[in-house]
Image 1 (cartoon, helix red, strand yellow):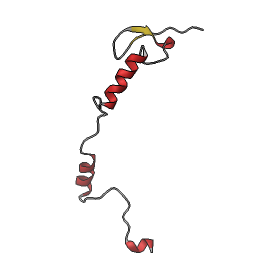
Image 2 (image 1 turned 90 degrees about the vertical axis):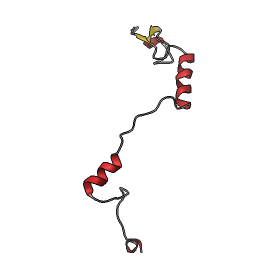
Image 3 (image 1 turned 90 degrees about the horizontal axis):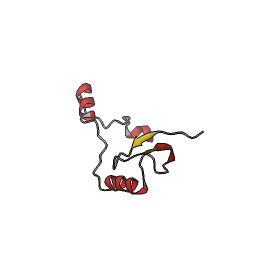
Image 4 (image 1 turned 135 degrees about the vertical axis):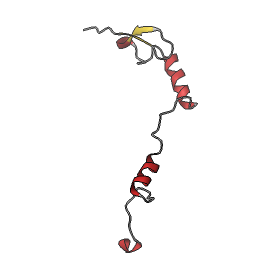
Length: 76
């Protein structure tokens, strides 16, 4: 069975058959390497949730590092 799915390359927008490309989701090795270069140069970033630590601190009314609280005597 020969599958056909026409998609646009996320880098250059050329339409290609998704299942026949060994560089999926890109149309070519060139587009794949260009995208990888953007990641290496930190042009792309993964968004982070801001104020996660601050929100927890405000709700609890105290500051913690998020770890279990132990006394030195717990380890002796």
